[in-house]
Length: 332
Ligand code: PEP
Ligand code: MN
Image 1 (cartoon, helix red, strand yellow):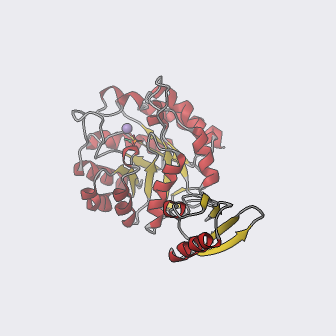
Image 2 (cartoon, helix red, strand yellow):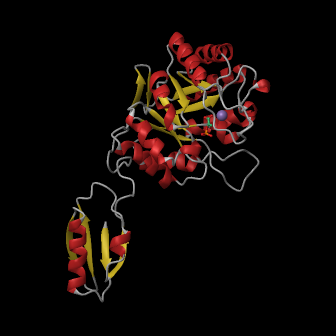
Image 3 (spheres, protein in one colour):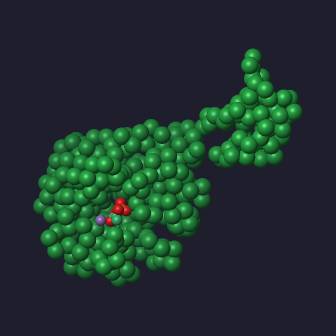
């Protein structure tokens, strides 16, 4: 960080800034110039809050040399982070990991039928919601613990890890017990308390991008988790809101690509929640992989017309099978 002083700043103003920096535990280096003096801040492991410094007399502006996020950035760690769920499922390699399953777990039969099928098609991990954040309070909100039990049992039988979304701090023990990876959904991306408590479980986390979050806000949310000593974070671009309303959201491939440059964390794409309709999901899935995604999370249902949640965007078993064949062609 660089603090640029006004050219009218006095030596006393400059010294006051230097000691304010030192009080924060950082070292300060005066960089006198022809017109004005700048002060370089060194040794800041973390992002330095700038407001107090900006208020000091003689300060013109503050230039951030480093990004507001640190631990998630490529500057901090150059090589890709690999997030290992088990020996078979590792995010961050050249091999995309496909996660598939229904939006919501509805019954043992439903989940088993979908899980067995997607596994045969090559999916490596299962998704399913047991605690569902629904726009309408009258909609199906999930089977709760029963849903997690079903997922856990089916996942164990098939040897497939499971991921499910947590909504509330009070459910932490259930998620610790039943799931291999904890999903923090778009609506909770900035629920900072939840981020920290989930991070403390030290399990892998699937952190979805908030539907209105900028890349910077998104990476700062991930920073909360890494700051708690948990770097097992997989990012997920799931579509953002724009003026365009012909699809549910817009899969932001720009940010999906840029994050791979900005951050060492793996990132996957969720074409289902981006599209909101099943017919564009396969094309978006392929676009996500082409843009470098380390995997996909796709909603699949054995009877989308009767699905209790997100049936409109769910692929049928056959459509999922077709997509997996096409994806294999792309990656081979
Ligand atoms: C989901 O995965 O079912 C879900 C609710 O996703 P998002 O948080 O991206 O809306
Ligand atoms: Mn859904």
